[in-house]
Length: 100
Image (cartoon, rainbow, N blue to C red; front, side):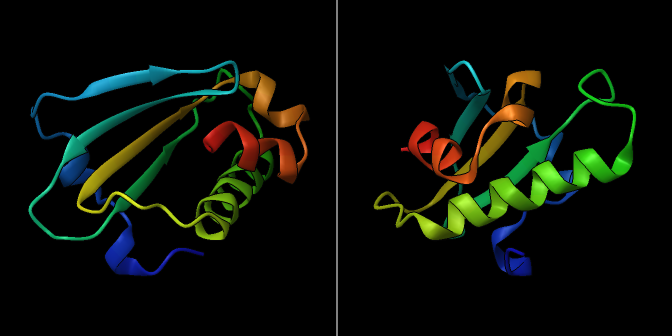
């Protein structure tokens, strides 16, 4: 689990600051500059991907573990991941490679 300082709250997600999207087969991610000085992350998983909360939460935990395993060099950005259904079938190593 990510430390609380590295998570985005729902209020911070709704901010209308400009962001640039990066789209992959497993997810799309929006990056935007923040004033905190360290990276923060949010994982958005729709019920369209899977109706079961257990599956959605498992994918969130796997993504959080993949992010913490990587050392992100750029600092001071908010990363908002919008997950796609294809990410459910991938292994942990494949998720890490997609984030790199």
